[in-house]
Image (cartoon, rainbow, N blue to C red; front, side, top):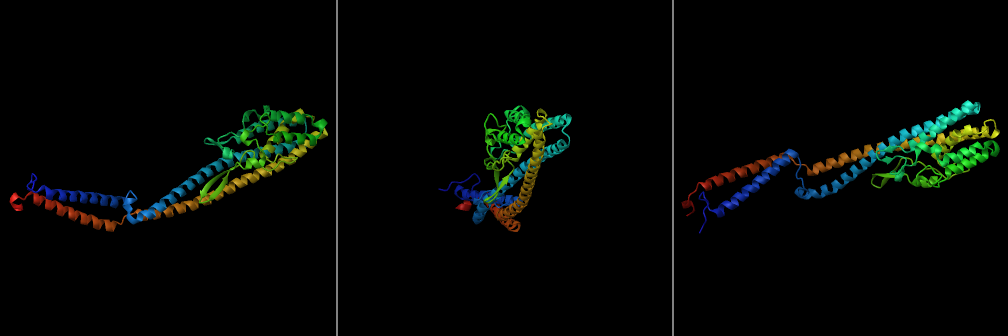
Length: 358
């Protein structure tokens, strides 16, 4: 016995037909979506054989985007570092000018003014070394979550400064060479009670240099970014090996000159030697500024290259996932015709009586 629908058509006949119409409607909707979005499918499965190429392209695009983000972040850090380092070189230049003045005028007034300026600059230097990019310290390297200088506003009250000040005060009796050796030793001292730097940076120059942060800017391509506060070379008799430490030492020496006998031979020799040393410090700091600028230029070129690669990969993926409007229009028309025919057939079947099936 054949079960009739309310319209008179057999249910066994209507169900497959209405199911086919549902499928045609779904197909029509999908084709319209492809035409409006120019994308074949939101899922890889819907791309057919093209999905393998899409699956290969997407990780490449993701990797390039990550490298671009690294470059942008590094450029921001370098820009802030450049500004701070320019201020630091400004401190060194001002100190050199002050020492040149002292070589020609060692009056109490001039000595006192130079010492006061050096002490203020020493605290300013400490603050500059704690410059941040967001929550990260730009002179922190791989330890960027740690402040390089523990108490920048009170360096002139620290054991570091007091030790150097006591040495400078004795220059008339101990001589310039002895003071210089003692102050280099004090500036190189990494013990917790003496160093003005955090433990991570209270290391020698080569060890601090190893903390320089590197970022991935390409496939197996790393770029060292920035400058670590205490980085440098192996210490010598006249240098800590670190230009920043040497600058701190020089500022502390000049900042203590008003405690010394300006009339002594040792005083004049100490001023002259310190002026020569600051000249070398300034040259080293300027080289660092130039290196930071060179890295920025390198990263700018890398950014341009990555932008081109990203555009090319995205274009390829768009082509793989893209739909062909002409083909879609033909398929949409064909689907519409099938739907029309199906609706007509259903309408005809609804109008048929039981006698039509006998």
